[in-house]
Image (tube, rainbow, N blue to C red):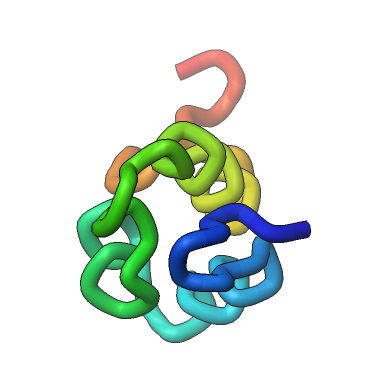
Length: 67
């Protein structure tokens, strides 16, 4: 699915960027140009980023149950 029409970035591109070390929207902007033109894709790109990071918010460690 296309996430950023302006830069032709798909959710697969975002997953690849995460595998390459991207962890924040700023990283995606630097690496892929996401949200650097019109910015309408920022929220969708953030959701895709969270999903690619395993559902955790970027930069935050998952808490284990009971901690």
